[in-house]
Image (cartoon, rainbow, N blue to C red):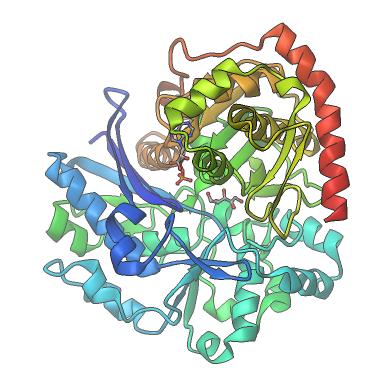
Length: 525
Ligand code: ADP
Ligand code: XUL
């Protein structure tokens, strides 16, 4: 058996990506968009509920329903799921799922005759799950940092300063604001461990790659830190699912999926990881110094490092790589596709006319700059959204299109400095990577070649490759990560965009102006 399935539960969709390591091909890649299928039932918009005051949640029951629909779709398309040797996946990072004491028996006694949705409705002690877009925990971040002995202590211990979107501050807020529901919570997992648990039919722990996005894991020991847990909420060690050893199967697939979709009984399940750690593998970043950019709902810039180098200013995050050896540096922008879409929609463009606007405007935008904080921003930290234009006419639609992309590219250069990595090439993925005009601007701002990948689903691909590596190295323990990832992580032939000397010179001059504009306004606001 040489087929492996990677499942990515992201903000707006769930994707299944099936690889065949014998033919070295991706044989299926299917996504279920949450709004398209579940908006009417759950009321989500862009996959989430905006609850106001910075609180953004989603619906774990919807994710279970989407998992059923994804597997049904793969089966209806004629894929033989019985040929899959191992499965793992990735989840949007930081989101937390709160379960009551019925979960274990619900998973154990599940029947393949009824969909997941009908059998799992009672397992939650909290119906909604706060996700990474939630910025409502500033007070809890400060409390956690103070409780462990200060910001630098938390940074040294967990690799990260406290971030509003991280799981620990979110759990603390729940503990403080809904103490009864917190007490009725038997288990707390991440999005990743929740989906893995459904697949395995039992509770599955948290992979260290995703555990490092919680402000609760000791980054060097790759274990929950008792000090950080105490700073977060009472009795948390009893509720949190354990950290799972990386890269080891935790069992075989639940009888539910065997009966309903024809999986083989011995199909292995591995712990899921976070979407970014999985993307690290899916883009082939297994050697220190390699850098990639993901242009999804959020934009993320990330690198593979041999040590957990931390961001003293708190602008970046550090995660354990799911390869079990390395670390991942990450800078995450909330205003990724959200900002691009805000500009596109304001000026009534579609992606074609948006791209055309980029093509016909000039690098540097005749001096026009924008700070594109259409939503609160993570880097730099902006709590209340605003858009600032400098030498830029709001009525000039095309110039505003260029300005939002140039701003994002400048910011990706400025806020990558802490990683201490010389960016000599950029590997790009995510929905907006399909847009060559966007990539051209990144090539010119970073003054390096930009390569595009065949799949924009690098998280799901990384998950499938993790499944393959685990399963095949159990048969051949000399198998290297390089051998696993190489056949699937070659950039698309002919996709490389080289920097243009003149544009590079323009941007080299302008980036200082952008940095000043950013600094002045983010301090002032
Ligand atoms: P996520 O995984 O975070 O849900 P994706 O990586 O799938 O997001 O990216 C989806 C986004 O890609 C869409 O919301 C859309 O904004 C963007 N996108 C799709 N096509 C284009 C395009 N041609 N140009 C720019 N952005 C695009
Ligand atoms: C990373 C982050 C997002 C989510 C959703 O820290 O918050 O990239 O993982 O994709």
